[in-house]
Amino acid sequence: MMQPPSALSNEDVESAYARWAPVYDLVFTACMRPGRKAGSAAINAIGGRVLDVGVGTGLELPMFAPHVKVTGIDLSEPMLAVARRRVAAAGLTNIESLRTMDAMALDFPDEHFDAVIAPYLLTVVPDPHRTLDEMARVVKRGGEIVLVNHIGAEKGMMALIEAWLGRRAAALGWRPEFPWSIIGDWLAKRPDIHLLERRNLAPLNLFTLIRLNRT
Image (cartoon, rainbow, N blue to C red; front, side, top):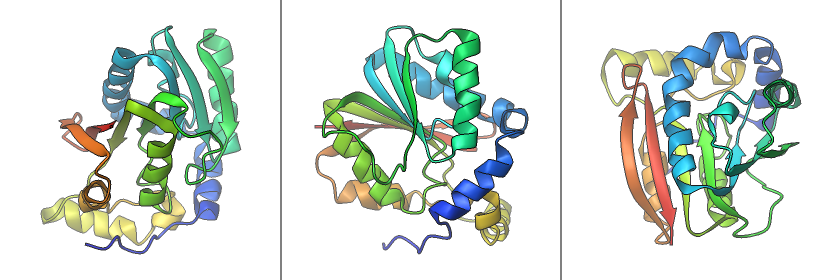
């Protein structure tokens, strides 16, 4: 199945998250906390040097264990400004750097990180497959890619709501319609990447934890 044309551009995302930055934590902390906790727990079990792609305001940064050395990147400088204040206020010495960067063109060498985490990212980026390719490129062989993402409903009222919201994706800054086939089709083309876990998360199974291993 071919991936549908993107409804988003980097300009859409930057504009939307400049608007979201002042209120993002207030609006999204509670509903996304279970996914951030599940993702950070998976990363803490791996340890080492970790890349947090789409770190945003850094809500998951305090959840990483001290032995995890984290580099965070995000396209939105206003969101990163909030993350930097969070790191300073909490004294998170294991956060090595927070950098403005495009997830579809990571400025890191091949096989540079022991693990990559991308919380709530794939519905935001214009090209999920290119983003996944970049994450696979920078993770070491034997390392993991940990995703937390909304997987769209295939039918029913939720599918109708997502379709309605999808027509407003550019203003929202994310793509509400996100079928599993986007990830599944990518996995089918990547024999070096294996699905380790796919688990629905609270609240109401709105989000999914996905763990991938690069061999």
